[in-house]
Length: 452
Image (cartoon, rainbow, N blue to C red; front, side):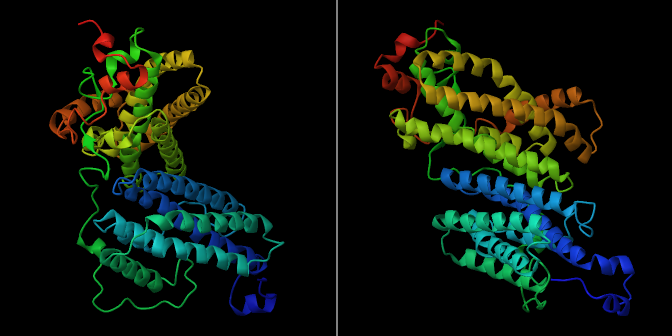
């Protein structure tokens, strides 16, 4: 692609400066469209996470969201070097409208089919088009980025394929999205714009999107919480975590359950993206990193527990935090996560790390060290972004006052919405502290009960 000749630019009525940089501006405009698509994918694909059940799929979606956030960031950085990209970060209404329709199927699997059967393939095609039309040497920095993004998108398609299932709802969702994209000329707006089919009914026309009141953990059993003071009730026994008499092998299994249940954080943090459409892109970028970190932490437990003899089918998944936090405004959700749950976990986790070091388990030490490092970064994110998020919702209180109020609101919401999920498994079947003790040491649980 080359710039038009000076006579052509003059004939079109373009000022001389526009003619001189026409080739740059044309490619910058395409990069801008790609940035907006990647950015809106990050904001909306996160709504899939708490609606699908398989942990492996949740983890994969978190990874794809993080990688897409990286694409958007580098597209923005490269775009800022080029005239014509634009100074702002806003997403065009027509792009947002397509993604609004994509999230609307009530069934998470149907929504997944729309995202990965239509929107992501169209993005891959747009990246390939960019490579086909740009001048490879002149636009080398863009070309190298886009080549990498093409490889990522091709890998995403391979990775998601085992989770895609045919269904009538999924096919209908794909048809609606295909029609909307065709009406916009594709993601780049270069294809002929086709009229919407007569009688097309868009789910997004029915009203605003709302997060479901519960999250999907199928096929695993569920409960309200995996924490308690009763070793016959739950797998994590709070006094045992800090009791010097507790065998370190017991603590190791309990902390892996704790890590696996960072799935709670994955599900409720995923709700914050959609609820902050006016946030700076850098806020969503850091939220995407936070989300991917929590997903990795959950994978630590998901991977390690079977290696220690735990049947994952006996580990109930806790739903309380999602049920409570989804009832709270997004800036309060984020405050509780960063300023209460994560900041408040450091003393107990420090003790746990010291105890597990007694086992000379290098892998466990490594996983817990990276978990702690990540959590420290998340608290830093909270200090940076909570005031920004508060401003999005018009809250002008001092941050400390806001956090204290959020803590009180959480207690009130917990009284209404917490503790409502009964154990899906009977005591004889589900993993409990007593069973962890027998599994780890062969001892009777009564021997490790703390006094009183």
